[in-house]
Length: 282
Image 1 (tube, one colour):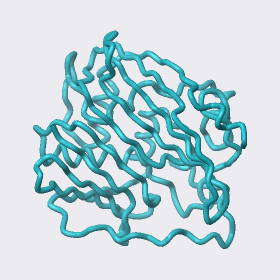
Image 2: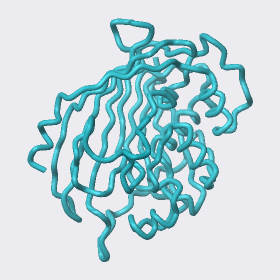
Image 3: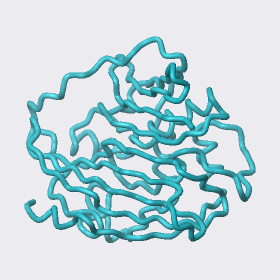
Image 4: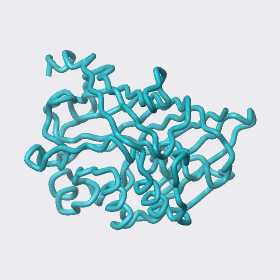
């Protein structure tokens, strides 16, 4: 793994068009009333994930459902890969009909020794530009963590209790259909989200794992439901603990006294914190 740092600075540029059908499909998936999503409709925060899909050929897919290691991302020789968190700056609207370009750069590769073995953290910077603009409309940092396969006797980190008394709350039932529809919308082949035999017998989890980006999208959706006129300037989230499809989970939101900050978090059925997030409003 000593050569992984040579991937720092590598970049790729992809192009896409913000079409209406994915927007309407995610509206349906999140249980919103149907809309026309016509030209000029602004994307809600995080819905840019519906575009620049990972269009790898079937022959390029690895055993976990992701593309085989190497290519743009470094070939980390650890089997388990998770989305650890992200940070965003929303600088300008992205609208239906826009021609968009995303430049992605490997910002950092860090190796650490965890309680259960080696860990590799990869940070990717994405810049999304609309209609040939010089400045990005969205700047995103994506944190990926790779780790060893789960071993018998591995001790999970101590859970953290979620805060109580949130002003905004919503319960979500993460059934198979919800997870499948989000995987399909984002063309995410990672088997931990839909293949129960694989996720329990190969990766050692008790159930299907709810996508971190889906939970983050649901947290932003909670903000939109309670503050529909708010404009989000920045957002960050960190995955704290996996969420499984075995039980309902809860979304929470708490506007702060400064009027500009909203604390958002998700918790599982036992009250343990699963995702911690903060949105800053304009």
